[in-house]
Image 1 (tube, rainbow, N blue to C red):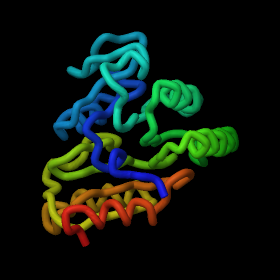
Image 2 (cartoon, rainbow, N blue to C red; image 1 turned 30 degrees about the vertical axis):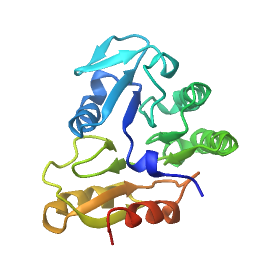
Image 3 (cartoon, rainbow, N blue to C red; image 1 turned 45 degrees about the vertical axis):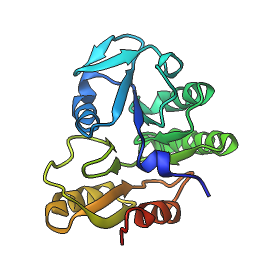
Image 4 (cartoon, rainbow, N blue to C red; image 1 turned 180 degrees about the vertical axis):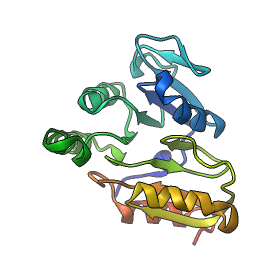
Length: 200
């Protein structure tokens, strides 16, 4: 079983493919208080986030890479990050939603990550959201989500998003949108998410 603590509760996040069209996702991660860097060889800064040419150029190896590049660039971006020492990834893209080529790419990606002993949320996921904690979540997560003791794992991104909207009423420890579960699956997340801080 993978050690998913750095994935669910990272101290640092590299947003690979940081760009203006990802401004909401960048803002969600930055607002969560985690140390964050952007990776984009064509920009020095995006939405207040400092950018570096590659993961290898970051001040340190990030606990998790939030991979926001297009479907066709995911495999290369992850390979570069693995080479730089990264071992945890949130990958919203690639997979079935990218068609047949995306499914084949996701299989290759899973094989490469498994060989490297790395963990991945996704593909085809919304990411991870921890109220009052680190977030690697697509889009602008609701700011009313309250911290609590319920850890939630949903394969469906829309269901996970709906629960975030209810988070002000029930209180959530963490929300994982697991997507395609190509490398790590619900059982892995439940052990870490529900076992932390007395979550149920």
